[in-house]
Image (cartoon, rainbow, N blue to C red; front, side, top):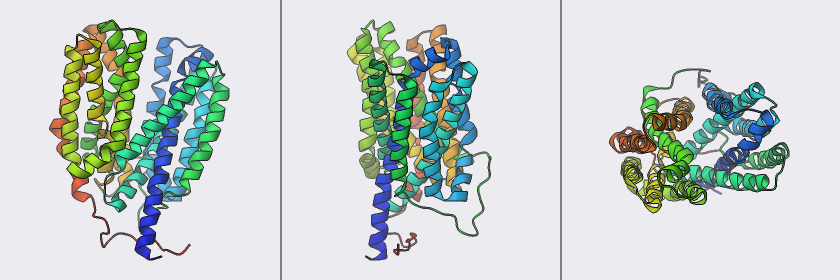
Length: 403
């Protein structure tokens, strides 16, 4: 087998392996989300205290994400991802064990910290695979994360319906997902630093380019968080629909995003990142307008579907652009991830607070304005297009074909 053929085979295998890791990561999120009511009852906390506790995953992620690059440099990308994804899957058991508010906050801090570090490590490997392939794959990888979330949520819904103890459910899920994650990590790229490469700093501000890219991701994740947490409430309160139809709107939004991400790479490869995000911003803004002016549930549901379609590929493209925005991809990816995590944290409460003062219609007017920002500022992603290599470029690193 020639060196070039061997490299192509290794990269293709690494693509499927990192996609499996994305799915495992998403499955943990879906498993946890469906058992929050059980965890709340077990810890004996009210709605306000639960809201406080649910801020700690984002806090933990923000603190820990900059460490992921240092860990990957120290142990190599494959070993680092193997350890980080295992910590993340095993951390699933912690929240259900918490007997009170303070232990729940601590458990969720650890849960978020491990999630954030694994997130940075797997996105960095995804960007490297995309670079070696010379075509967009990040949208599909995040689509696999959405698929994993749906699978984890479906299993969690079944467990909740059967009345199972979340401690047992999460222990079994954590064990299964840890095994799946470890198996998948066997075939991801084993990137290692060169002898003269300086280790990344433990903590440092992300580069300015990553902040600009993160601003695009902030707008997309804000719209996503608003739709996920408030779409059902919007249909129930503003349009007086049944609880079942309102819930179906949220599920439909999630499915739209998952499907759009799975097919998004073909669109990006055909039209480029900038034009794709601009078109997505137009679709998301149009969806927001439909939501704001809707006087019938079908119109609003169509608006949420368009919004999901428009924002689906934005975050994957932000990670891809961040990975090529400077000499330290992990630091840039961590910066973008921190911004998007923060957006996901504040979006639900911001929508609720504005709705309390004005109305949900005004709140989704704000979401529509942010969606317009995607179309206006998509040009900051041009780095990803300019730096995307061609397949078979002469300076591509060729691994040693010997076992």
